Amino acid sequence: MRRLPLSALAFGYAFLYLPIATVIVYSFNESRLVTVWSRFSTKWWSALFANEAMIDAALLSLRIALVNACAATVLGTLAGIALARHPRFPGRALFVALVIAPLVMPEVIMGISMLLMFVGLERYVGWPERGFTTIAVAHITFSLAYVAVVVQARLANFDRSLEEAAMDLGARPFTVFRSITLPLIAPALVSGWLLAFTLSLDDLILTQFVAGAASQTLPMAVYSSVRLGLNPQINVIATIVIAISTIGLVTSALLLRRRRRA
Image (cartoon, rainbow, N blue to C red; front, side):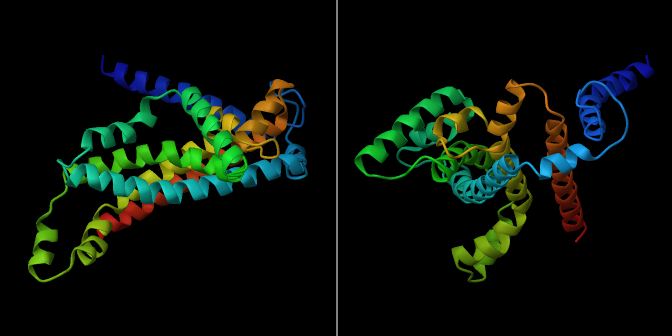
């Protein structure tokens, strides 16, 4: 019985991470068959970096993810502060529903509604043309909900005595927010930023509705490639994404750990 929890934990981690480890290993496989190992080689890494279409799709996804993460963090932080600090104001119930709706609404419904909105705006106003702008706006719309929830949860147990002491000493509200509140909720902001960045980089369904014919993100390129057959370059792309995610998580953990010690 003592070994049962440890065995269950080991099985769970193996179930989660062995497929990821397999993808990383097979990215260095020379064979074109992604399930058959022949010998160690980096030719698929060279082939990926020579694939201009895939590189352009990856760069577009990174630009959209960066814009989305920054904008969603700002807007989501403001929404989270409003929900946590102002329990009563006219229209709060509607505001809460609008903020939380992207968390529970199917992406297909969001994609169709945004597509109709962008088509109508382009027809009557002439803007925006479907592409980078429409994808970024769509991603910000659903990402800010996640940031708002994270920030609201952080502020729910927030000790306001430091803020009150600063205001008693004559600090203005903006100075209090910039010097005290913002540094204390920084871990939540970092978590929200990383979450928004990951959601944007990974999104496929919503992006397919709002992307133009000339705009193809990395998930769209990977999905199109997989439909034609498994390509070993997909393993290389997955390995790069895993490496970037791991570096981001480790860096965030180290910064938070250093901040707690300070």
